[in-house]
Image (cartoon, rainbow over all chains, first blue to last red):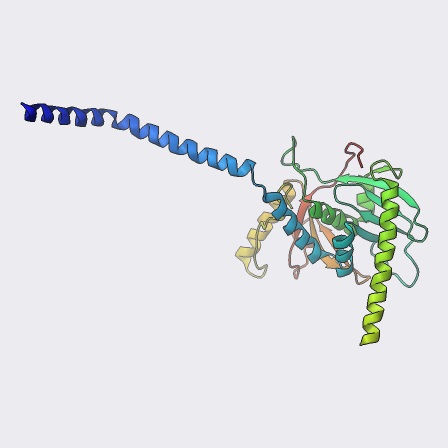
Length: 200
Length: 82
């Protein structure tokens, strides 16, 4: 009695499995795809290291493009200084004007001899491939983009920028402090170089 | 330069090899068509490093090591904040 019942049970199980197999297979495939999609979205939307890595790459790129002295200024003080007129040969005299380039802030023009602030030039580098909610360049890429644009075609960049009086977006006190820090940095660098030359 | 990502290598090649040069030209055109600016880091007449904006592949110096593409500049005025 037990043998026919057991055989019937096995046959029923096999029959049920055969009938349910396509449905089960589809369900497994769907769940695999869903898991993969969730993982992909999770990686894309949350990667805590992405911005840090982007900034590291941007700093390396900036360093490879600008003068070593300019890189040191940026690395230690947080901004770039470009002497104007860009591309002009400079003798002993001071530049008539200069720019300070901050990340994601307007470019500030000033007179090196007096420290007088001239203008703010507001310029951005929007992502045209993503017109809505586009993300920003890493800090150092923004600085490099401004540096490339201003050293390549100063007039064009200044023409493209929205010009404002000093103090609209960048605190004039902060700029004055930065100019003092820059002057101190240059003095100390000069002393270091002088000391190095004497030692040699 | 790509917003949110930073530097991305688009194409690499030797301009002396026709196939590779063609790939570089296509990559160059693609980026300019997408509205990017192209700049070549160089050394100016005053002996200081600067950049040169190029509008066509022919303007890229043959010995240039790289061309950097970055979003076109636009006058901006984000909300005032310090």
